[in-house]
Image (tube, rainbow, N blue to C red; front, side):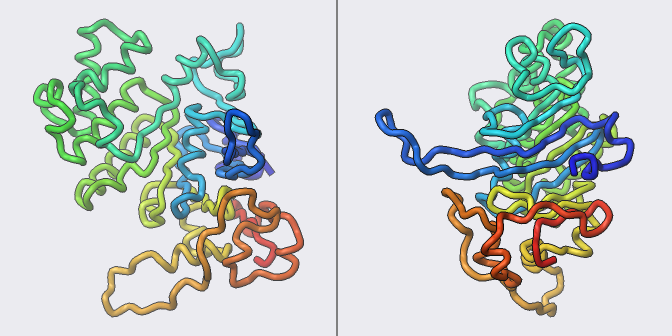
Length: 348
């Protein structure tokens, strides 16, 4: 299945990130004298690939595990099981191994610095992701200093250049200002500049526009698209908004309670949603027509608790198509229901 989920037939040579069976569990009720007996299944058996210049939108409601996947991919947390494999320029774990597939678990010590240069994250909240005591120059130049890139004068030029690239001009008026002196949209542009100044190959963007007003949001989305096309960056775009995912991403993966339940090319998935949860998400997207009326989503109940969920389909309790077969069998595996359109559902 792994090879079949590649974005294009030639993706093997250009593939930057391969995720297979990725799982992350968090213990519940553990203490100094007591071992945990229950676990939150935040991410459960997730698999996908990203190639150079590709963009994958990870979509789902709050608590489904989207941000946890992003943190796993940038090694802010480690997986419970599964594999993440990178093919990144400048990353080697031994003599003669540069730019060959490298397991996430094998990246440590000196290799971790090279990894941090190639893999970056844009956080959701531009107000909380910056030190209020540091200037914009200090914030953006810090990754350059950590990576040992250029002299102090070189870094001033590099920071000025990236500020121009993200639309904060003239750079001299922003270099020595503090975060509280900027608007929300300007802060998010600084966050993007900080992630891109080291010229990464892969960026995880965790809802980078959700805290912004509509006008700023459009500008940030256009900026990220331009940078992706111009620099060949691969994006994992975490969002709860299908409209944003459609605008930003080549492919969409729909998550529910730690599982990816549907994955496909963006237009194909939105035009022909197969999983009942994807259909419910689409039915909740606002339509810019005050006279338009449509049926409410055909699902019931609330999100199932992620603590030790049953082995059956995660969507069983809310699914309008659920049968005894869904109840009595393990969570369905991915099946290719249409070309490059994968669904995890027994009844589709």
